Amino acid sequence: MSDSIEGGGDSSPRFQTQRRVEFRDTDAAGIVHFSAFFPMMESVEHEFLRSIGVAVMPSHDDDHRVTWPRISVACDFHGPARFEDVLELDLHIDRIGDSSVIYRFEIQCQTRRIATGKIVVVCCRLAEGGRLTKTSIPDPIRSRLQGL
Image (cartoon, rainbow, N blue to C red; front, side, top):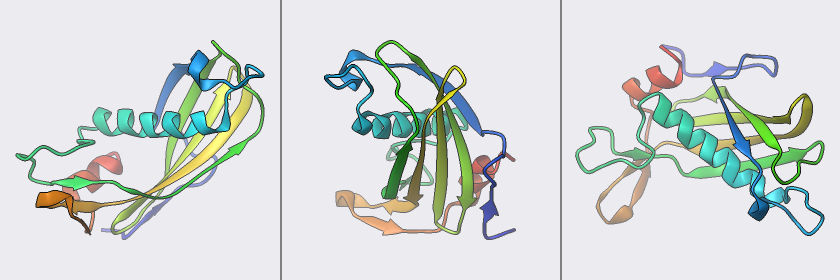
C-alpha cells in the first residue's frame, strides 16, 4: 500500500455540495466575511466523511475511535459572495499520509471563483478523558478516503 496519495489542482472533486449564503455570514457591506469560509469548509468535510461512512465524532462502541484535529487551515479569496448567493463547494483530497489528510476546497458562485482553501487534519486516537494520541489512519478509513 502506498504511503500517500497526491492529487493535482485539476483533479475531479471527491465531494460536491452547495450552501446558500446566510445573513450571518456577511459583513456590513453585505459580502461574505472571510471568517465564514472556515466553518463552511469544515461543514463540507464533515458532510463528506458522513457520506463515506466515517464518523465525525466516534461513539464509545466504535472500533476505530479516532478524531481529526486541524493542524493547519488557510483560505485565499478571489471574489465576493453576497447574501443569498448559492455557493458550490468542491472538496478534493490532495494527500493522504500515514496519519494526516490534506483537503483542498474550491468555492464558486455560478462560474465565478470565490475562494480556495485548505485544511490539514491529523488522525488521533481518542482516549478516556479526551486525551488525543496521533495514530496511523486505520486501513478501513484509509480505503474509504481513497474511494476504494
